Image (cartoon, rainbow, N blue to C red; front, side, top):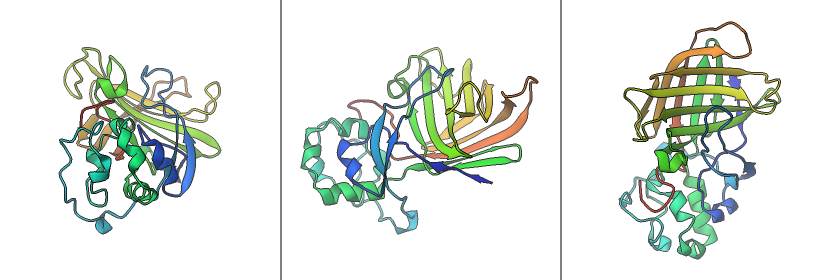
Length: 252
């Protein structure tokens, strides 16, 4: 098993959260050639260590209907709410974010689940400690991609990217149904001309979404060989709390 140390990943994070957690990282989360969509802009953030779900307090406040662009953020019980319900893209533009003290920002950073992903192709397995997703055309900032996701990590000296994407040319924002393209790939993005790894599958189906949980299964082709191959593979992932359903305004 190859353990991949994640170097990045945050989507629409509050600028102030850069002071939270442990290791500072500068990230560029964007689709490579062939997907035509951007998951998130370049951002500098701090990735906190994921907390044990068994140690987290039970959510005491339903925040699913809150307008995160306008709510007074100091009235939110950040210690117990379900952070996956927070629209961090909207929070970033909320003027009351400046009123959150350092202790609250540190609390938010420590509680955020960055997500995770495990990709297996044949006998090879890669694990990632972070995974972000964009649900819907507004979130992917694309007219054709209804879902996109991203993680990157360092593997044997190379920067490796994994994405799972769903293309819906109808513009209806569907995740399943006819005339869709489901794509999962892993690629060395540190050297496009001479990559050390590049596996990909494209199919009419294969990606299943259940809330923030993702499971994909398909036959991968090794793009570094001239022969068309069909190597069984799976991707099991959990989208992190910073994942985006709407880029602006509306809640999840």
